[in-house]
Image 1 (cartoon, rainbow, N blue to C red):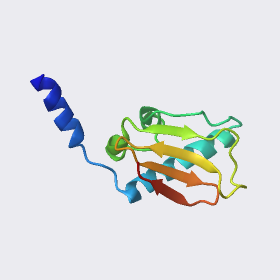
Image 2: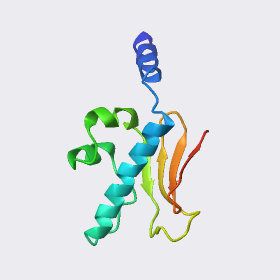
Image 3: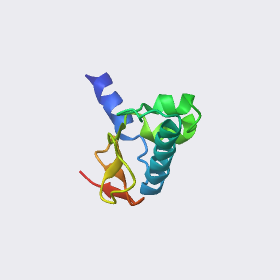
Length: 110
């Protein structure tokens, strides 16, 4: 029981990414998605942070805040619809950060 409490305490103290860090991470995800399209592939429905690190899109240090985040790409998304969510990122603390078709990055709190 004490061990579970200690693990929870350590997990809760992990630093949260700022909005600016999340927006930069979203731009990495967008570049990953665009690279998939340029190769003639559809972007996957989701991607793991480890995959982005191993492919050289982000360093392990820069990705540390995003471990455990849910990342998803909209199927058939295009930049032509300004309100369309192209990429969504659900952070461990419950915040959502999204890239919209107009290029803006929006954040919603839980």
